[in-house]
Length: 110
Length: 109
Image (cartoon, rainbow over all chains, first blue to last red):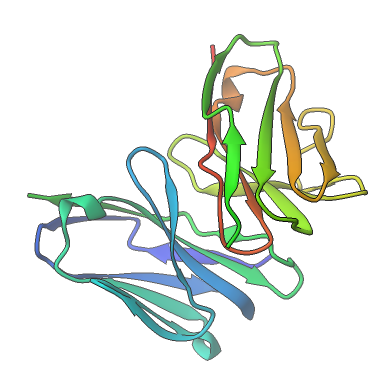
């Protein structure tokens, strides 16, 4: 099946810093989503972005489908941004079932 | 988008017992998915549940261990059978597109 690789696996930032998280995938996708899982385990969808660029406040995401990668940008990070960020994709053969990367664990310190 | 309610939100169970997790959606959906997230790990698809047919299980998951029901287009259950501590995980359901339920945090002692 399709492989999803995320980098970096871990990241520590000081509050106010910016960061870029990367997601590489091994095959064509028809859906790509970014999720944030907070320290209490709640999984929140951030972006549905199979291609192009989207922005939502301090977060933005870009997917270059032809080159099989996506980037999640976090600007002016806050302690509430801490948690695990997952990239997940669906491929043509998988219907709506999501294949998840292993995630990037982010800790934002005061 | 659809709203998903999942019950129970958490449970602590004795090894050898079974737990049934319920997933209710506020609109009719074709496909429902069940995922497992082991401690410190990513999410892994257990099975796809379609109404009116048997669930389709992913490699490494079997019906005897994780029986699934899908009696209608808004409801599904996942049972974790004959539990062991290795089954301690968060179990999540999802539907056709975006949402996930809040998950069931299961601890087996």
